[in-house]
Image 1: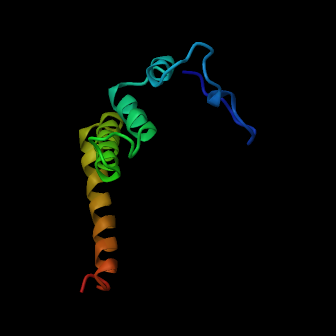
Image 2 (image 1 turned 120 degrees about the vertical axis):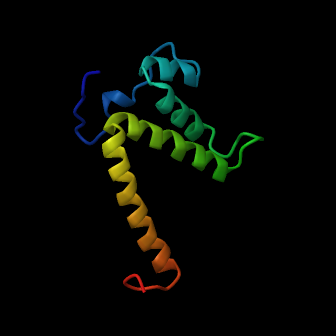
Image 3 (image 1 turned 30 degrees about the vertical axis):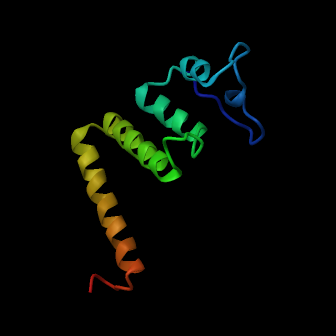
Length: 103
């Protein structure tokens, strides 16, 4: 897919295809893979589906974005990235619990 440079105003990549009538038309037009398509669908209907509240939708998005990052990075780099994220999240948890410097 060709990269398009934006000048800061509305960019061409935000224009909808003429015959797009539903979300699947956009997913097909942009040639999204399964993970990106699921993320797109979940974002679009965020909190609207009767069977899925916002937390479930957010977890679904997280699951599929993690799968896409793993696909893009490959397993070894993905595992390293996960370790970095776990360390970052542990700092946040410690902060929330009032701990400082791992104490």
